[in-house]
Image (tube, rainbow, N blue to C red; front, side, top):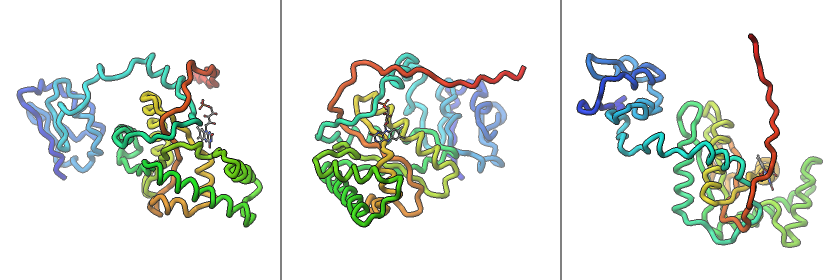
Length: 276
Ligand SMILES: Cc1cc2nc3c(=O)[nH]c(=O)nc-3n(C[C@H](O)[C@H](O)[C@H](O)COP(=O)(O)O)c2cc1C
C-alpha cells in the first residue's frame, strides 16, 4: 500500500506530533525525521490525523497536501454560534416551491461526507431528489402506494394513521412530504460495522449545516415507515442498492417561514456518576 507519505524537510521541526497522534503507531522517527514504519503500514485507517496535527504543514499523505486543508482553529464557529445553531434549528413543514441550486446541494453533501464513521470507511450513500418533476412523481407514487395499501386492507393496527394521510392528500393537504422540493435518504452497505450510528450522524450534520445556511429540513419518520413497511418497492424506485441498510429520510428546501426566536426546552435529564 503506497500511502504517499511525504515530509517537507524545510518545514518539519522534528516535534514528533505526527508520531504521537497516529492511533496505530505507523509513524516513527527515522532517524531525524518522521517516516512510515514499513511493518505497520497496513494498519493505517486513513484518518489523516498526521496531516492535521503537524504544526508547520510539513506532512502530506494519501495525496493530500496541508495547504488544501482549512486552517484551525480560526475556521471554527464560536461555541456561542454552535449553541445557537443547536437551539435555533427547527423542523420545517412549510417550504417554498422553488428548488435549491444543485451546487448548494452538492456543497451540503460534500461537507457532510466529512462526518465520522465507525471504521472511517465513509460508505454512506446519499440518495437525493434534486428536481421538482422527480419529486412530484415520487410523492404521487408514494401516496398511490399508501392508497393501495388502504384499499387492500394491508395496514396493520399501528399503521392506521396512513388512512388519514391518504384522506388529507385527497383534500389537497400533503402531511407526509409537506410539499418539500427535495428529499435526502441515506443508506450504507450491510457490511458496515456501525450502520445506524454512521447514518444518523451524517443526517444530523446535514440538518445543522442546512440550518446554518438558512435551508429548512424535516426528519421524516412517516416516509421511513411507508417505505420500510408498506411501499417497499420505493427503495428500488430510488435506486438504493438492495443489499444496503436503509437509513433515515430528511426533506429539505427553502423555508416559507422564519422563526424569530428559539423555543425553550433546556430541561435535561442527567445521571451524574461519582464513584469516589
Ligand atoms: C427521527 C425524527 C423523525 C421525525 N419524523 C417526523 C415526521 O415524520 N413528520 C413530521 O412532521 N415531523 C417529524 N419529526 C419532527 C419532530 O416532530 C420535531 O422535531 C418536533 O415536533 C419538535 O420540533 P422542532 O424540531 O422544531 O424542535 C421528526 C423528528 C425526528 C428527530
